[in-house]
Image (cartoon, rainbow over all chains, first blue to last red; front, side, top):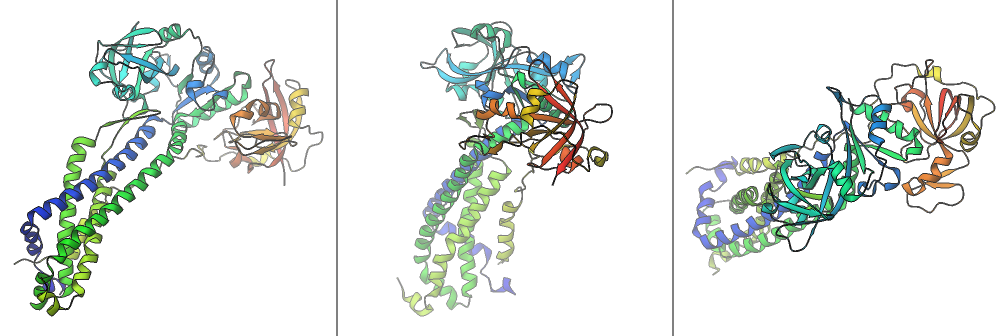
Length: 389
Length: 178
């Protein structure tokens, strides 16, 4: 019944091509709005993914009780890894190797060959047990660092503000008065480790004239076993250690960045809102110029509701085409773009959630943007509308 | 000419909003990883309050390693007084109270932040509920004993103390003051 009263589908489609310049401008505007939404959602999703991917529920981080969860400020005795492995049951072992990673972590000024000003980078002193505990780390190019060498994460250049070429294999970086040669590149499944530079622990300790550690990361047999490390640290108060599951540690950082993410969603709402107003403005212009045509359609016997639906169809088609273009541009240019933040760097993520939000905003722009001008035009009496210029 | 039901088209266009919006549920930080309670908790509970209980501060100073001890205190003293999945918890001296992190703490008050960590050590003790063989019971104390934060409890057992100042109460029985 409803289908018989509606205007033909291709009437609306052809209308878009009757005014190509107006349609292209509207399409461009809608594409920019949706692309902005996609960038902001990509930022939020990238930040969330980076922190979520870093935490492993089987891994427990042990750091100084007095550091207030700031690992850079943590200092624990160098004997802690051996003490933990000997005192706590449930530490993962394979082929006689304990999955215990002693680490020295610091933020420091780093210079590359082509940088005029040093950039703030993150350095982690590690041993060969580090990849056992940080299972997501994979060397994708080059080799594990030997004496005088470092290995860099794929986003380390973003964190430093350097070019990718500056951190290619064989190039040199300088920090804390020592020059290191880059031996390899690693990825870490989008986690925060990707913005770090990894150096051999013993050599880094010598360079920094330190014998202590920042933290010990221990991989347990199961997440339940994390409680045993916690218990050990709370019993041995003389060691002044604190144990936190890695997933909980990074979940707490997620909470820390909650205002940033909330702000991001507010920006999405504001961009969408401004897009709707822009759409309204465009559609008012488009409909006002077609008052006679719309009145003629009414005179031919089409119901107002059918004409209104056609106008909404035109706007929605344009908005959805805009969403399509925005998603293509987003996947091409935005997805994977690195962004620097205090914890390191992360990649903007155009994923299913981002695309869904962008398409939703586009559909909303099309429907909500077209309705008010269309309703206004439909209120005019037919005779009066036909006479209008 | 063909005509389409626009309502169907709108329904199709709204599909992307629905598809892919599912959010994964993270395992919460406070999840209790304890195995199902298979141990009868009542055998660790006392029906009558034992006599001669001392406070946590006094116990830390006076108790001797391996000697029987009865200690009284309130469950708490830190942001999370529980050891997840284990029958162990932190006991705070009854004379002390805890204020929220960052709040000014007066006489007899502690905040849960790291700023009060040293002061907190002097008036708190770790209580481990152990079985007849002296092994820690691998069931969360909230499930095993039905206790909750701020409960006043009297624990009976042995003191474990070393030269470094570490003090742990190995409790065989627990009385809950209601």
